[in-house]
Amino acid sequence: MKRILLTVAAVCLVAMNAFAAGPYTVSVTQIVEHPALDAMRKGVQDRLKERGVDATFNVHIAQGNMATNVQIVSQMLGEKPDLVLAIATPGAQAAAQKIHDIPIVFTGVTDPVSAGLVKNLQNTGGGNVTGMSDFSPMDKHVALIREIVPAVKTIGVIYNAGEPNSVVLVEKLKEEAGKAGIGVEGASIANSSGVYQAAKSLVGRADLVYIPTDNTAISALESAIKVCTQNRLPLIVGDVDSVDRGAIAAVAVDYYKMGLQTGDMVYRILVEGVAPGEMPVEFLNDLNLHVNKKAAAAMGVTLPEATVARAAKVIE
Image 1 (cartoon, rainbow, N blue to C red):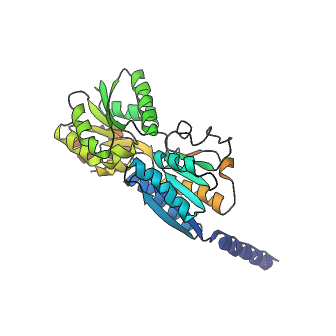
Image 2: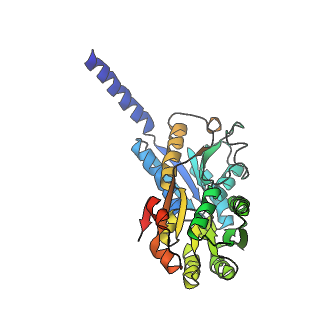
Image 3: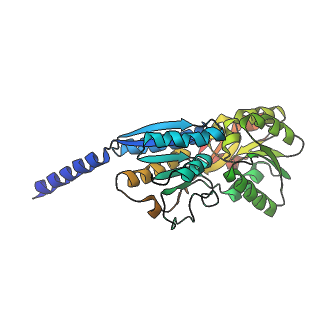
């Protein structure tokens, strides 16, 4: 009897894997290439492969160009995909505006409600769109800033005012910083080439520079690092991948893990047949602290021992 049950289970597993095999076509729209966004894409790909799904990914990168971002939607429609994966807010918005009969799963979107992607976080409005939010815990970001630069009076923030997610984050930064009696000086950019000048404009006006999960600013992070290093101006960021690149610190989600969880959502839609409109927006609540001691020293900061001790990753 036991052998029969095992045989039945094995047959069911084979059948399930065969069902999961596909093949499926996933069209991907991504506003720029940088480590955090790339990590989410890889997480989705790895999760589907791990779960036995045969999926072809057609990846489209807009290189920060909004016109290209819109053109990508037409290209994706021509691919007749089984699902659209939209990484970051601009691509998700462009896809949702024109695609209504193909499932869309977004990831790395700060505020999907204000971006017009879903009616509410429970996604009770139905439709063909769902996904994951990476809304930054701005209270924790301000706390980290005060921990690393206790005398901070003014935070300089570099962001693209054309990215709705960034506008929301800057408003939240002002709110949380205001509670601590800290001012915020904005340096708005229109494209990645403006990051260097924006960083220079904050020298003498701010005690440190903060870059949120702004796709445009992060794509040119090295420009900000150069200015901050030359002027001994601390640079703290909203994503942990940027700490590897030379920022001092960040407390944020692990974007690869977010990609894995997004992959589970994609699996439910492609393989299990769940409608996107029946799936609430999901979050990743597992936050990591990464610090870069070398960057801190170069920017004139000595990291507190307690900060280093609790970091999940320390770059010497």
